[in-house]
Image 1 (cartoon, helix red, strand yellow):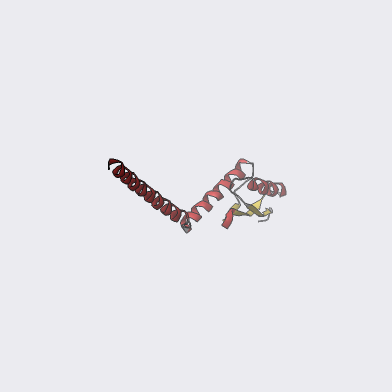
Image 2 (cartoon, one colour):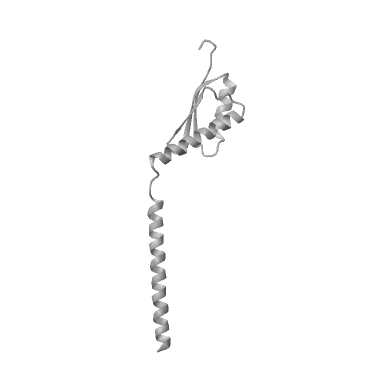
Length: 115
């Protein structure tokens, strides 16, 4: 009788543990499938934009007239003016090397003295 009672208690404990684990996994999966909020996406885009600007500046590119626009999928567009074509090419190459950037559209133009 004691063996039967012990087996029933052990079986009941296993059922409880299994049901708790199944419940925990279910809630974790529902949290993971939730889409990020627009606010979170904007924050991530802003952070990537600052990261690219910092990399450009550290690489010797004058970023005073450069704007980095981040779009879905972390593709970026460089917009603005640079001193010369070498700065434009350098900016594009540096931006491609920044971690998190998936694509670069380089719309920089040479700044003319008459502007």
